[in-house]
Image 1 (cartoon, helix red, strand yellow):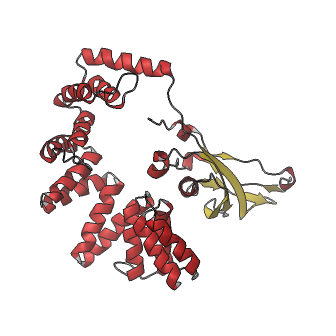
Image 2 (cartoon, one colour):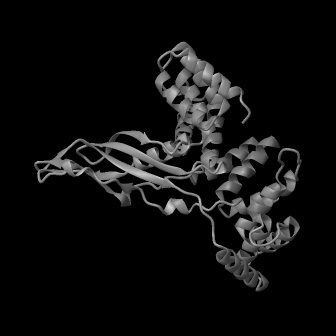
Image 3 (cartoon, helix red, strand yellow):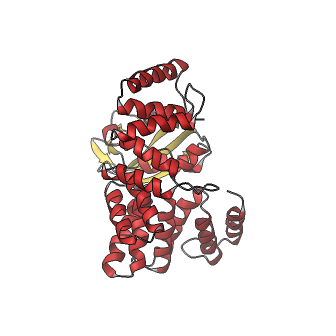
Length: 348
């Protein structure tokens, strides 16, 4: 089922404070919503159709920045809680006051994650508009119509019809259609695909600046042993803030062992980890655990592993279990270590 992220339009709303907390001599912090970063739906949570409302508490400093944060009422889904907490903690606030002077104080906010879909009327209108434009030989309409047939939105799913419209669009220069054709030709579990054809389409889209295509082209080039060109395309995608490209490039630079590469690699991994790229979080955790490219810091390692473990990343769960077993960066807890080991063994 195709999911539509209409919930992302729901702004984080401040909860009203108890009347007794407001006096003529005191005010509560007020969020400046223009400064807030809209939470992104974690891929893993979206795949499992997780939704709900999270209530958060933030300690606001006298300068209006968030000093501490905590989850007060969970959605029941740790990934959604963490995503909302991470994003809303970057808001700036008008600080609370007492007797007209800024003071450090707590305030509460909530964020609603809700999945929704288009109405049948919207589906029919989208189909009619795409078909009319496609018949006028408009490449973006042909691309949209190809996607409609590929996903079965208002029509029976038909990959061959979809491919026909996508090829028409791609041959007229639609980067989106080129990228989609590259994905259709890519190898996957149980299907060898056509890597050469995939590379052709990805290259066309990559040359038009599509970050996903730049990343996927780099992966195909790496498998062919063309590592130098692969790194070039990874850099292009990473420059567009593509988290998977940043993670792959960071790991590649770490492997060189050169001091300059280590520093740059850590920087890319940090950018990817901040975007919840799980492999980057694990690799960065390993760096903190071993002191590779950074000062050894078991607490930081545990924090990185914990983020990835929330998404049931097996490597993170195993690494975090090791830290709990030995009491490194966390309070020693052998029961927690065993729990994590069991999670790592469970089917994904």
